[in-house]
Image (tube, rainbow, N blue to C red; front, side, top):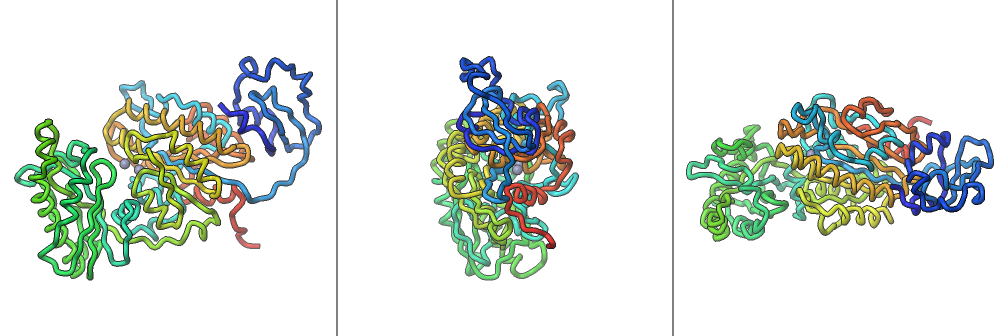
Length: 490
Ligand code: ZN
Ligand code: ZN
């Protein structure tokens, strides 16, 4: 429901008033609080026949808005945009759920409202059929070509975890995991351990590498079972393979040099020693004894993957002439934002996990848009439900995201500013992994033709009015709408 606050002010629509109704499906006149005053007595009428509509009133429903037609020339600039990335939102129809996707199943009135009045289309995060990781997809959605700028996920995670990376450092994504005595992986996520990982991280952080001279390790726990490792020292390389075998029941892998260089050989040797040492340090840890007593998986090893070095991104301001800030509990997304020179807001309750505080995030959007004209909001939870193959959980998280969308639409004044919503990739619950499907994209705000799509879904996105775009197209479209884009040619 659009609040009365969101309707005060001046709105310019190059469209007819029926399109306006499409854009703002307000409370029905029957339930409108202003209704006791009759329309005629309050003087609701159009005063001109120009195609630009100006509304200057507070009202609960369209019938109760005082409308006045007058020609207005608008300045191109001074609009804001919020981009909401719903991680892993898109899915595939499921046979045992009436051939519906979680998005089709979910009750999402606010996303539907945004879609109905806005541009709706499909987006290929990288290009059609490419299965994208969240890191490359998020780079692309923010306008950075991953083919040019991607230097591995580990560094993005480490930046986001608050580690000051230096040129030459190599950073890794890590999991606390459970292995048996033969180093066979019983659980890649150590029973999705949530508590006590900072205690475990302390003993891992103290590990010293003996076999390779001149290397220091920095280790930090992040969200749930996840952590980051940084190797610092001379002659290191990110061209090393992962220790994490990425499947349960397999033995841990030995890290190898991918390019045969001396740097890569040194780095892989250091990693192999680090992983072995982590097992020695964690095996006997009191927290693991406690976990064993409670019948939980021991977090008895650290598995590494995704080696990366600090990316050299041109600033977001220089690329799009927008002052950006980022609201996310996910270290990788925070890392990209930092590398792009955006302000990363510290939002209490934005966990990057399955349970996050959507109200706190909504408040942060209001706060962030006070002095920034671009706010990136990222929500991780639907991707987690997708990986877990949890249909109900995904429906629930999408409905929770919908309440966040409602707060955003109400507060950022969508009559003047833009709200875009998309996903970084599909994470179908039937596969528990990312797929290369296109994802829905919506851009709502002033001057955009209404798609009149009634319910946002993977299928309705294909029938929208934006067509099919790529991840890298999104920021130029947003920049153009908010009036910050440079003229090409003269
Ligand atoms: Zn993702
Ligand atoms: Zn994922």
